[in-house]
Amino acid sequence: MIELTEVTKRHPGGVTALDRVSLRVGAGEMVAIVGPSGSGKSTLLNIIGTLDRPTSGDVVIDGRRVGGLGDAALSELRAGRIGFVFQQFHLAPGTSALGNVADGLLYTGVRRAERARRAAAALERVGLGHRLDHRPHELSGGEKQRVAIARAVAGDPPLLLADEPTGALDTASGAGVLDLLRGLHAAGTTVVVITHDREIAAALPRRIAVRDGRIAAPEPA
Amino acid sequence: MTARLAPRDAIAVGGAGLRTRPLRAFLSALGIAIGIAAMVGVVGLSASSRAGLDREMARLGTNLLTAQPGTDMTGAQAELPLTAEAMARRVDGVREVAAIGHLDGVAAYRTGKIPKTDTNGIGVYAARTGLPSATGARLAAGRWLDAATGSYPAAVLGATAARRLGVAAPGPDAQVLAGGRWFTVIGVLEPVALAPELDTAVLVGWPAATSALGFDGHATTVYTRARDAAVERVRSVLGATANPEAPDEVQVSRPSDALAAKRAAGRAFTGLLLGLGAVALLVGGVGVANTMVISVLERRAEIGLRRALGARRGQVRAQFLTEALLLSLLGGIGGAVLGALVTAGYALWQGWPPVVPPWALAGGLAATLLIGALAGLYPAVRASRLPPTEALAAP
Ligand SMILES: Nc1ncnc2c1ncn2[C@@H]1O[C@H](COP(=O)(O)OP(=O)(O)OP(=O)(O)O)[C@@H](O)[C@H]1O
Ligand SMILES: [Mg+2]
Image 1 (spheres, each protein chain N blue to C red):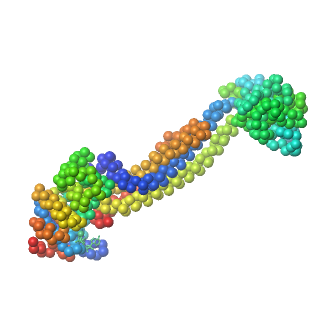
Image 2: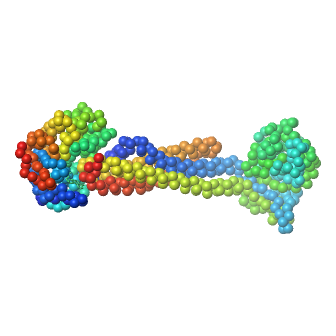
């Protein structure tokens, strides 16, 4: 599902965020990315998610060599094959939960009525079937993140990327969110999660430790 | 996969920014609205006033011709011959003839106490009984001179003359002093559009003027109503007919032409106001551009999210262009409605038929869309060029 070969990312300021990283994640795996702040975790995830391009190296996602793809093909890949979950949720403030989730399918070419139907189903899956009309400010942090997860998976992407999805949540809500991700993994989705939470990381099947832009030896479970 | 959103989706996405910040959208649309309202209003008012003039002309008729003595070869004031009216009546196509004769050196006063040098701009004229019918003059109060009153010391005042002489209403108590004789005011005219010289006139009967004021019988203006189809022909022969011995000393004119000239004079002013409206519109466009730049800055995270959800650069660009277009279209439609309402209100108040030319509305909306596209282009391109990671990192 994910194949990184000798990937280097150098930011304009001269910071080398990733240094010759090679990495392979198979389809259906669930992986935690761990490491200290500033080690390059987000940079790595953005490159996997095709939101950023490496300075050098080779990236293959879902069988597609990203380096050779233009904006249209990359957008198509993101729309159909990759779901994103962010620490800050990124929900549209004035829009209902259903609207937010349905907007996640806006760029997949699915018709309006079908988008609403799939959005309702996705919200049902994350346990928010009764909050379809609630707007983000009427939801708790954990509920917001579940809406964001519903948005990410409404199109059934084979790859789900989450950058500190529990970072803004208390322990209980965080556990709920992680249960959801585990459920998706169980259903066959490849899941990559950045987390600072040792307990969470320890509970996942595989851990990738990043330090100073390099993959370090996996931390003991 | 489609590169474009369905039109309904595109409008919903483009309008989202407006819905979440209605006050800002309203204010920046207001700038456009004021510009469009000004332009539609200016065009509408000038069209309405023109329609009002046309209607007035249709009512007054454009078939009135006047013949007046000009100057002779030495530059002295010429005179129409005594036969001028009778001759004019004989021209083929002439339906009506009437005349007034100015009484040189005769002034009119309300009392005998006013110094004789102060004429108040009011002239005393001998008038034929057919004058109202020929000129379209109407009585505001009282009666017109007839065969009987035309021989008595009776007078009819023009609208301005009545005001200046302080005559509120005709009647036995309303007397004016003209040429040392008292005349009873039996009527007051409304303003006469085609013969404004009558507004400042004290009109007495032709016989009374001859017997009491020493009138020599020479007409100073001959009014001729021609059949509509014959106007130009009558115009060409009227001078020679009125004064066969010296046709060049007769000035023939068509008073409705003066009204038409007034109409043309309004156009220059309209152009100026239109220019002001265009400036207002431009300022409105700058307001929209400003709003869009701020909107793009504020919504960087949303842009990043949409890119993560699979929006292409072109789709992000289209979203913000749509927003700018909707914003200015909102202002444009509001402004067009406002301008049309102002036009209708003012036109009705002025007694004009309200006219808002469709081309002004269409042009206004086209200008609006152009402004919206120009104002939105730069912010939209900036939004689309934003790298997704940078956009997502924005607070
Ligand atoms: N746009 C950028 N320009 C310059 N340097 C950057 C940029 N983005 C990240 N960096 C630098 O790259 C390094 C890795 O950043 P990254 O965000 O990947 O860290 P992280 O592991 O996600 O940290 P955290 O746990 O705090 O989120 C950091 O030193 C950071 O300062
Ligand atoms: Mg990070």
